[in-house]
Length: 148
Image 1: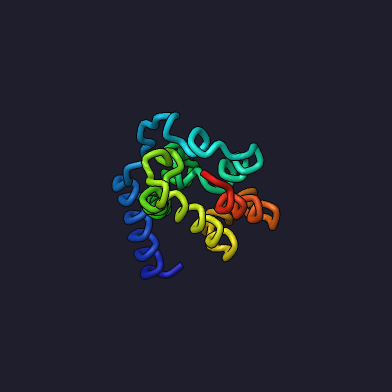
Image 2: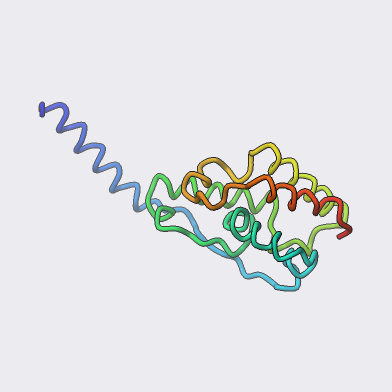
């Protein structure tokens, strides 16, 4: 191995180690069970299981932070994805949404699931069980026609 290659590898190693000291915030804000999607919308057990498996790690305040969410630079991506997901839709805060916003959110869930945009591809890569099957998409889309 040449001298330049060794220097480049050393610099990359120092940058990688240094990046571990710049960790994002990974938190799960407190939640009121009375405001959760499960309490307010009372979905079927099938839909609960789908949301738990494919949605709630990002779209709730009960995120399970996997080991790789503690290693930069992946930690920055994961924390950013969760932050953005919670801003867009948070199942832990469902009861705070207006009836109109809930209806819109249910339509969004159906569209995102149908298009394959959710869960995100990188989440599906790390969590193969999160892949939505046709029956999962159908169950999620039925939410938008069921009165909430």
